[in-house]
Length: 203
Image (cartoon, rainbow, N blue to C red; front, side, top):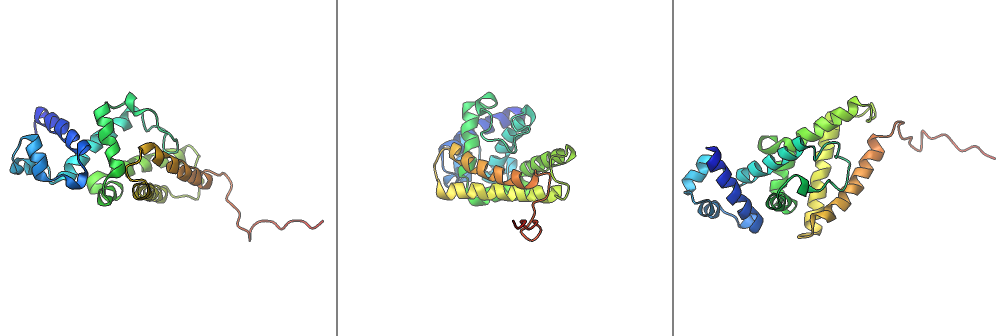
C-alpha cells in the first residue's frame, strides 16, 4: 500500500469508526466510504477488525514513543491526550472503551492481532523489577499476564455497567485497581498471614 493510499484509508476509516457503532459497520460500508471495491479492501486488510487495530495500534505506538505512557502504569488520570493526538484521533482512541467484547479480547490477549499492550506492560514490570520496586518473589511474566487480565475485566465492567459514559468514569475504577495492585506487589516486606502474625502479648 502506498503511503498516500494508506493515509487516505486511515483518515476515512477514523470517521467511520467514530461515527458508527462497531457492530453496524460492514466491509461494504467501509469500502463505499473508502471509495474502493470490496475486493480491493481485502487486498489491504483481512477484515474490519484488522483495519481498526491497524489504526489503533498506530496511535498506541505514537503514545508509547512520545512518553505519554512512560511510568504511567499506576498513574491516574493520564496526561492530557490533546498534547499528543488530534481531536479526531482522540475520538477514535476513545471508541475502544465501548468496543465489543471479542475486540477487547483480541487486544488484550491475542498477540497475533495486537500485542502492543502486553509488551508494554511486560517491559514496564521488567524495568520496575530491575529498579528494585517489586518484591523479589514476584515473577514478571506472571505479573504482566495478571495485570493485562485485570485491565480487560475493568474494561468489561465499565462497558457493561456504564455504557456510553465518558471514559473519565473508567479511570475511577482503574485507580482503585492500581491501588490494590501496588499495595500487594510494591511492599518491601511480605504480608503476614494470621497464622504467621505474632500473638499479642497478654497484659
